[in-house]
Image (tube, rainbow, N blue to C red; front, side):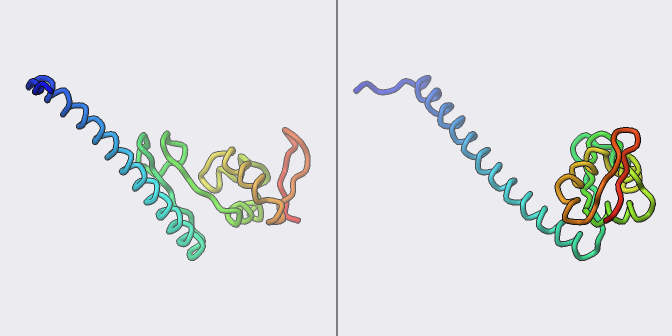
Length: 133
């Protein structure tokens, strides 16, 4: 067996380095996923304890607390939606304005948990309204 040249040894080391970097990146992604799950559990516990939601600013956000700003995420609870409806909000836009989130978030939350929470709707399109049963 012929001895490897310096160039061949360098190429082998580079290949090993790339493989190790890929392995390290995979390990970090697993850790990030675990920490995100822990964070979600803590946020849920906080929201249940205080009744307040936590506002998140992601990478592109302005950090101003403006929920309309790009990159801002706002988690809402069905209790907050019910409170907004009790307070006079009639549709997705009204509830979203009161809670500081998007209309799509309100619609998704009501679709997922509204029936169990006693939220009903009447009308369609322009005349659409929420009410509590």
